[in-house]
Image 1 (cartoon, helix red, strand yellow):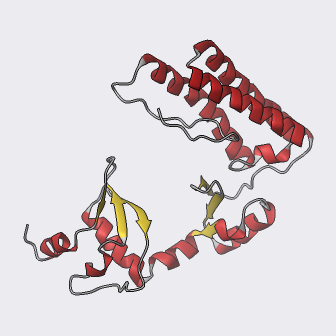
Image 2 (spheres, rainbow, N blue to C red):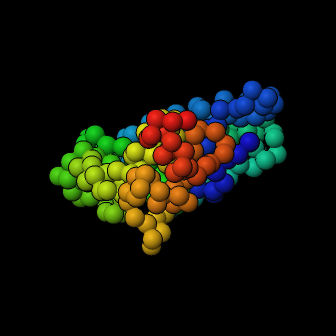
Length: 226
């Protein structure tokens, strides 16, 4: 069972495989309860923001409780694990109460999507540039270069290189772009419209394996052959 290992984060929920053992199923089922509480806190206060609104002593106690959860999982101690999950849920309640009593500002009412990136920082996406500016003012803990508007994203997607990525993705409706690292020799277009993307793009088709785009196969599709 894979989890995000961090002293500051509780384990993430992963749907057990059909062959999962009883312990794994129990753990993931209980983590859904904890994830639900965290999601509610993130909606109210902002992604991973609540712990930053309380004192250092309270934050330390919260992280210690989270460490107990990790330890109980590693030990496969069901009683301690259940107790630790319940303790984390109560801890979120305490943090919420303290932040409310201190009259901390809740997350903006501006419609937005918040996403925790792989580097641990938070990305915020809103609709317009004006809303992005408002978020920058209200959410000082979020780096400005991680706040984007749909207007800006539309402009990025209109770039000729990204248009070629979109064409590639269209050939594989279930594919997900997992990396994009154009080389210095990168040139959009080419004889097939896709040639220069070989080895620059990595897609995942929702399976375990990643694969590289096959420009020769794309050319066959374009010409109507198979």
